[in-house]
Image (cartoon, rainbow, N blue to C red; front, side):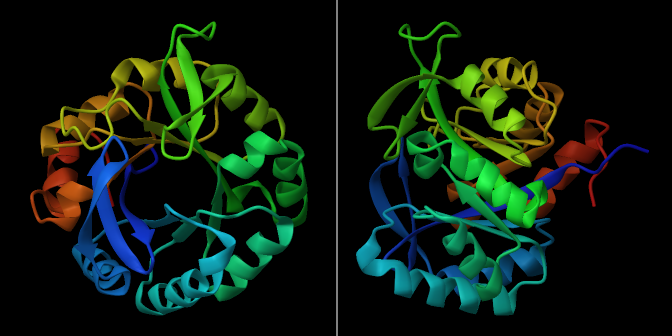
Length: 253
């Protein structure tokens, strides 16, 4: 009996509202995070990911408040990211009701933060969010970006994932900037490339547009699949994704 594939809706939150765009641009309102969280909990989502996509020091308080409200209404694991910069930020998120914290920019700025967080709370609480895009500038052809894909870092995505695993990260959330919001399917080549350099659980994100897009991502090496707009706008349900995975021979909860 294998480990069940997880289906994870993602709430990209800006100023207390869920938003969604294409390639991280042209954001449009997709609803209230607390209400959407409730809906996904009822629909059978395995986890929920909550990302403050425009996190800044000025609106941290609002975010913690929304996280607390969301955590009170869902009974599935909640991962929260966006503006997580310190061990104390993770501590506060966990106390607010999150089960895991997701980091991206802070780890790129200071990779030691991965060690510090996992040594204090354990690997299982830390998800490294990797926003990667195709690039001729790196050895693997994949480069890590920040600021929703707008800023290149020059860091090779595969080398970064391998380093993060060595430092103790518990999970990788791999988001394809090229595929994000296109609904043309996951970047299977990128998933395969990352799977080849890490053993930690891998969440595939970016590009889902139909139920049939999800099984190939698992076949390519993902342990979980994440999507946003197709769930928020009712184009595809959690149940339809799980049915497609079942029909492809994968175990789901």
